[in-house]
Length: 165
Image (cartoon, rainbow, N blue to C red; front, side, top):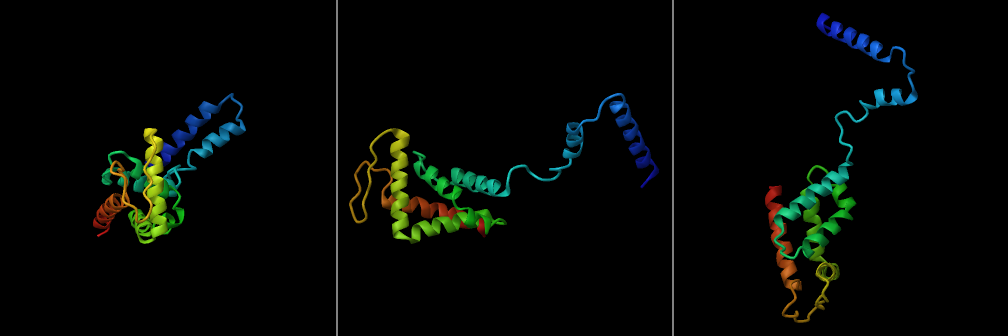
């Protein structure tokens, strides 16, 4: 330790003595003094929350969805996908890619996803949603048909994969 640093430490100790002179030192004082270093260099926000926020921010900025229902439901699915996100901590967009691929590749899961998007649309706009059944021609006013949702998800998946390479 250099002489200058030693003098600075001595001055700090003298200053602390002056501050605490004639004052009772309580447990709260001790916790406050020691707790200052507790989170030094670390974020108080859990890593999984940071990763979900990053993914949801990417969805918000890259999914073309005027009504916002598809975006909201996909973000809900991201928020319950802790296992995929945790296993892709170094590259959270890879987790988003896995989530989208799983939705698209499983017909039952996909139809449920679209049903949730329609339901969210109805809740957001306080209107009766149009629920398209598999193999059924969509209602002409249905914004979220099986085909339109798949196109939007595939477009987002392309954007995700372009970021991964």
